[in-house]
Amino acid sequence: MTINRICRIALAIGLICHIGRVSAQDNATDLAKQDQNPFTRFSKLMVEENAQIGFGPDKDVLNYLRVQPMVPFELNEDWSLITRSVIPIVHLPFPQETDGLSDVSFQVLLTPNRTGQFLWGVGPTLVTPTATEKMLGSGKWAAGPIVGGLYINGPWVFSTIASNVWSFAGDESRRDVNTMSLRPTINYNLPNGWYLTSSPSIIAVWGEKQANRWLVPVGGGVGKVFSLGDQLMSTSLESYYHAVSPTIGPDWQLRFQVTLLFPK
Image (cartoon, rainbow, N blue to C red; front, side):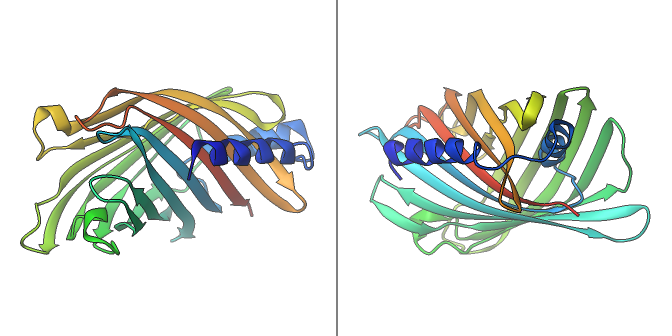
């Protein structure tokens, strides 16, 4: 997906924001905070378009389209399971132009059924070798722990999700997997469902040399909760500069998200 296409989508979503509105300002702000909560108790379907710009020797665009359904399950009065799948569709421009499905991951977080300023969750994550092309995946089964925390203070919502996976099966000719993922998020909620956000995806591939080990983005963007007919939605547009990046890039990224919300 080209940058022009992403911008056109962002403009279209911006126009949609004027078509439908959550009925009351307080409801919109509250719904935005729930959407920002990784342990929220309603189902969501997020589609994230992530253009990684400046990748490879020709400074091409490495593109990830991630489909992420999240479904909660209440175990009893005290505990719930939050389940999320990450289904990535990739355009890889280098070393050979390739498109297809990458490795799909599944995450489960056990979290207490309570409200308050601080919430937490812990559980396992599993990565499956579902890539349709060899260059788009690791060829390995991998698993590890995932932990998360949330703190709410007035208009501020802080959260983080961290995981590390190690390979345990798969193609023996492929490299072992040992990768850490950290996604800290800071949101400042404004009236009428608008919010400012910073949610960089920090990656560390421990088996790589130091020059290629880290990806550390710095940046942020703006988002809004709104309604389109009877469907509640949120959308955000963010930009990040890669303060630390592998030798072949990318240099920065443009992220666009649309989430369908299904509150109870």
